[in-house]
Image (tube, rainbow, N blue to C red):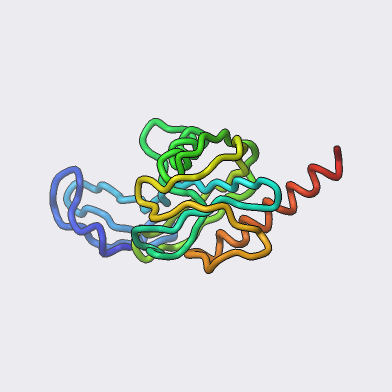
Length: 172
């Protein structure tokens, strides 16, 4: 993603790559501004009900046409929990509440660069999901018969959520 930033956002001069703080970073040689390539924060929701998980078929890349957890990027001023609620509502029409953070992982995406994904279990009233926003479809799937997923990490997140869910019920 270094090539994505070509000009300084402060003075407009061309950026150069320079070793700084142990990393190769875009730096403006005119004003000294350093561009820190921070990850984009995103959220993913695992809604489990009666052995089923809510998935959406993506209408946009990356992963267009494949199934995924309801997920998306946080917007300015949002908490992870409010972003999760918004994304699930936009993509499925389901009203949910974030319950438990189950993973925080990073990955490099060919479209968006470095992404930090905060995955939560979420609770909701069981309802029919209606695709909205950038989702083509929304559907509850048996966790034992999942379709091909857009992201390998989503399968790992679903399995983590199932394990946590089963452990929570054993304790009760």
